[in-house]
Figure (tube, rainbow, N blue to C red):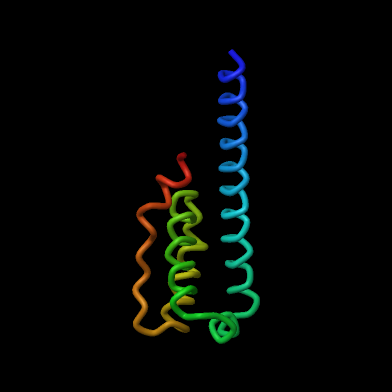
Length: 100
C-alpha cells in the first residue's frame, strides 16, 4: 500500500512538472513572438539562425493548434522578409508533446 501511495505521488508530481513545462513553452512562444514584433530583424542578428528557424517551426505549430492565424501570418511574413530561403515547417511532434 505504501508503494501505491509513493507511485501515485510520483505520477502526480510528473503530471505537474509536465503541465509546468507546457505552460513555460507556451509563454516562451508568446514572448518570442512579441520580441519578433518589437525587435524585428534585430532578433535574427542577436541569435543563431538554426535555433531561430527551429523556434519558428515550433511556434507556428503551437499557433496553428491554438488557431492563432494572425500570428501565423505575421511569422510567415517575418520569415520571408528576414530569413530568405527558409521554408516554415510546423513541428509535427508538437501536438503529441502537448497532449501528454
